[in-house]
Length: 274
Image 1: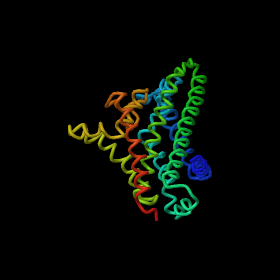
Image 2 (image 1 turned 45 degrees about the horizontal axis):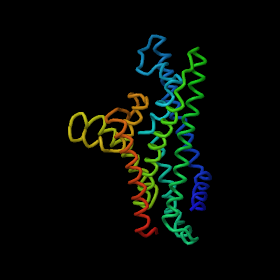
Image 3 (image 1 turned 180 degrees about the vertical axis):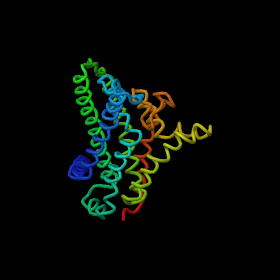
Image 4 (image 1 turned 135 degrees about the horizontal axis):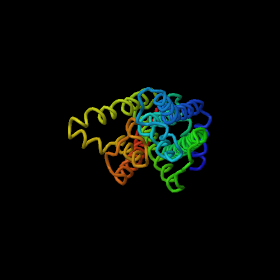
């Protein structure tokens, strides 16, 4: 088991696409969380219309919400792509049979992939918090504002919630790759769901139809957005909104993670990998 875990982790580390995804995640997070609010605050001070999120939203006190606010949608899409690549490339390169003939069972290899994805998603979340902390500290220092950091417990809670959301989307990508035995179609369908369908449900259909509003409260995106909102993520961020309580949101997102992981293992074990 440990050999499979280290081997899969080495694959993720040595794949340039994953580093590219990490760079995009950092740039997107800093742009939408810090640079755009700063630009809005500057425009407001020069006479242009203000924004709901100004300079105060970039302060260290908002580190937790700022760091996990993108995970329900656009950063979650990056996690999904990483999950698809971790599994789907084995089909594209026809390397499943090569891996499995070395000795480990399918579930052992699959468990190694999940371990590697858990480490990768946690790394992305930690880097998001670290870059956010540095950026907010620089802004606070430049503006002469006090650095009121969240408590250690709040930081741990935020990191845990961020990892849970990120890992759920990565597991979703993995199960799509196994179900469709590839990379292109799982990425396409996964991104359509994350960036289009769930936003239409959240912003268009739910306010008009009661049954859609009830349905979305059981879906991973709405619960991930509620969990992030409960920890301070701005409601101006796409996919963020307190639709359900924090306990339900946590349990539902964790439940989807278990379901995605179990379904991927079941499909991989039952079906031909070729």
